[in-house]
Image 1 (cartoon, rainbow, N blue to C red):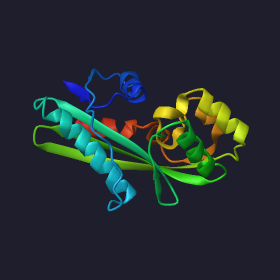
Image 2: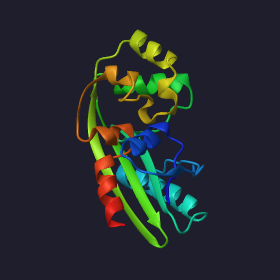
Image 3: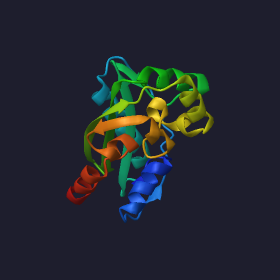
Length: 182
């Protein structure tokens, strides 16, 4: 059986749209930011921990763990704590470039395969009103960097370079290739 170790409805939708049969078993791992890790290492560690946490309960199944972070000028932006934090993040990202890292870890028994995908995003110059109106939608509250490119947050983005699905939170093409090899 294939198990997604995430409660993200975006990740579940991507897997469903790809035609995969899976169940969702959230890891409930306490996410952390540790300064000793470089961003790609951090996101990879979080994805592995999520997958391994669920794999302990389902040792015979294939577990998909994933994590996404936004990095602006060496500052890791996870999910906002509240609306004020979401405003702070969006103000930082406004009229500038940032990097989105999504890591995926696949675990089956003793096998662990993992990878990190990276994309760049350039945000429009956002007014205070645009930011506050976007926050009122509620969309930014469970998203790394406080926006969802696939939702209303896409209107805040000027352009991006790289894989769109990395920015959404699950680099689908690479994931499907890795699943074939597992």
